[in-house]
Image 1 (cartoon, one colour):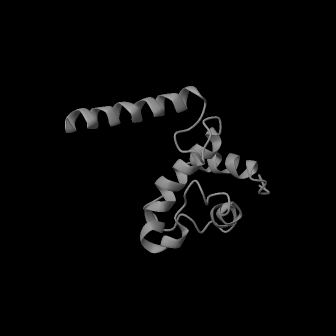
Image 2 (cartoon, rainbow, N blue to C red):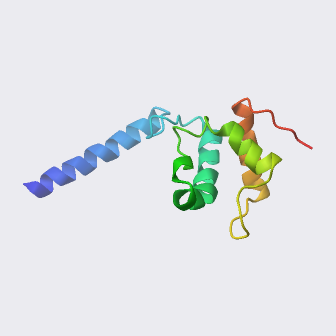
Image 3 (cartoon, helix red, strand yellow):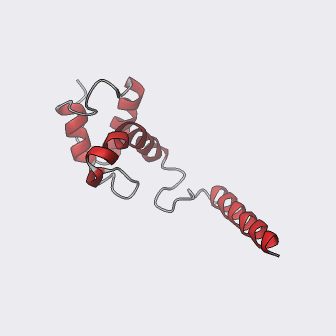
Length: 114
């Protein structure tokens, strides 16, 4: 009986994920499927920034819920002051920088393209 219940739960969760995809909705309600720029930027923030922030600055871990709030600071630290990411271990590729700039422009952050 317990096995049938677990299988049913798995099936329902799979169906909900499929229904969300078909309805053009991201499984995470805070991100719409058509907001790919935001998703791509979040991927960069999570893979390149949160690696250190989780250890060094837990109050500034980037999430889908707070990334817009931090957009001006991200621009300032990454592109103006070039302080982030720190050290030599983590670098942003040009593609990752371009992704962040595209997203920052959607947030109304003034981007100075020199």
